[in-house]
Image (cartoon, rainbow, N blue to C red; front, side):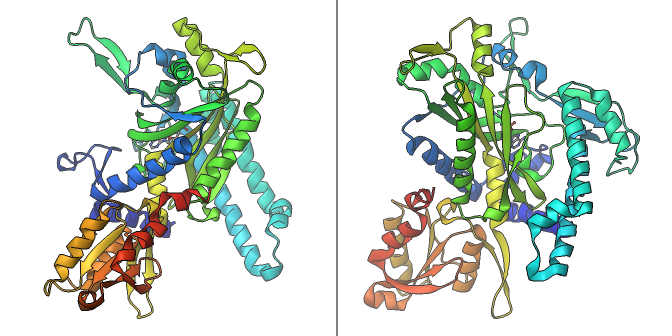
Amino acid sequence: MANQEDQFKKVVSHAKEYGFVFQSSEIYDGLSAVYDYAQNGVELKKNIRDYWWRSMVQMNENIVGLDAAILMHPTTWKASGHVDAFNDPLIDNKDSKKRYRADVLIEEHVAKLEAKVEKEVEKAAKRFGDSFDKEQFLTTNPRVLEYNQKGAAILHRMAKSLEKEDLADVKALIEELEIVCPISGSKNWTEVKQFNLMFGTKLGASAENAMDLYLRPETAQGIFVNFSNVQKSGRMKIPFGIAQTGKAFRNEIVARQFIFRMREFEQMEMQFFVRPGTQKEWYESWKKTRLNWHLSLGMGAENYRFHDHEKLAHYADAAADIEFKFPFGFKELEGIHSRTDFDLKSHEKFSGKKLNYFDPEINEHYVPFVVETSIGLDRMFLAVFSNSLVEEELENGTTRTVLKLPAVLAPTKAAVLPLVKKDGLPEIAKEIVDELKWDFNVVYDEKDAVGRRYRRQDAVGTPLCITVDHETLVDKSVTIRFRDSMEQQRVKIEDLRSIIAKEVDIRNWLLKL
Ligand code: GAP
């Protein structure tokens, strides 16, 4: 645990030190759970967004984009169910005066049982060596079975109680499990209450005429209210999707863990409209497609897993998360939800406008069903950033800090470094920058010894360093150094463009999908 915490602290401080993420309004002591992306962070974030957008919109003929406004007519949120049901159950500890999400306290208790299972597996793997059969062990070992059954029963009961709004039972469960406040260590809890997560704001210049609005808590509703506009103007045929990236806002009760849970964050969502009755197939298909998208970045298949929802949101008939192994354990990275026809039907009801579709293949009008994929851009940033940050022991006994970002996402693709600041080397290096910058984000750096410059580029994840030396003057060749292997090759200046493209070209990465 201490190790995990240390690793996470390193992630946060590295993000700050190297210009990726800063606390918002830091000079005023910051604003809790709100962050700014700095010079390197903004590039990484943009590249992740592009990678998602291209794979969704550019690579699929039947998916188009949208950029809806953050402010929407307030009835939107009545229709979507957010005014009545977008709540988190909160509980206070009377001694520490700290506020918690009741469901998170219970989930953390279950996570401890899961950790015990992992320990048993580790112990058994050591004991049995090569003959260890993990699958068999998980399905037959009595202690493992007991922990898993206990965990499943707790989550099931919580899901049922939350579904029935039986908050007294949620509290009873916390008491029965003897969950203590991590700060005070006491079990002195208040009742569980519901807390709506939407931020309110006002539209209008005078107090009397002002209209109460909400900052959107998800981007999805901008897509639903535009369903007919897009379908008709784009002559879209079902099945088709609408994709959107943009800010969303939630007044989270417990916002910790850096950019994992923020109050202002960005979502990348796609609503896929399908014929009623086919939603299950599309749901399974999108689960696979989205997992493949993650795997294409090469961050390790073992770091992902699916988690099927026990407690379904008010709009869903099936839902699963793609969980990622963050420095603090497996947590939700993306949600895939089969949202039924709930949203479109509800908007029909509240707006009085028809939101149906005429399907020429079966000669029928219907309100389409929706399968949604929804991923937090900031959370994806944290997944990529934390997974890439490594301390590496080198053969000469020293260590280096390197951010092994997938090259397609790296903020800077190449750094051009004159070996010394004289003899015409800076001029050639600058010429190379001027040539490459049309296609790639490249930087020029002449300060300090070249070894230190390599380390600086390693720390911000630049996949390639190009060094100009005295040989360059003779034969127009440079040294290219690869970040991960630290291998160096002598290449011609005229070949640089194609060498860099091979590493970073989005096409080569998307081909893995
Ligand atoms: N339209 C469906 C929807 O919004 P969600 O599971 O509430 O579903 C989708 O959110 C994704 O948005 C999550 O998987 C997560 O990546 C991201 N997300 C949600 N709340 C967040 C927060 N407070 N901070 C950062 N990312 C968040």
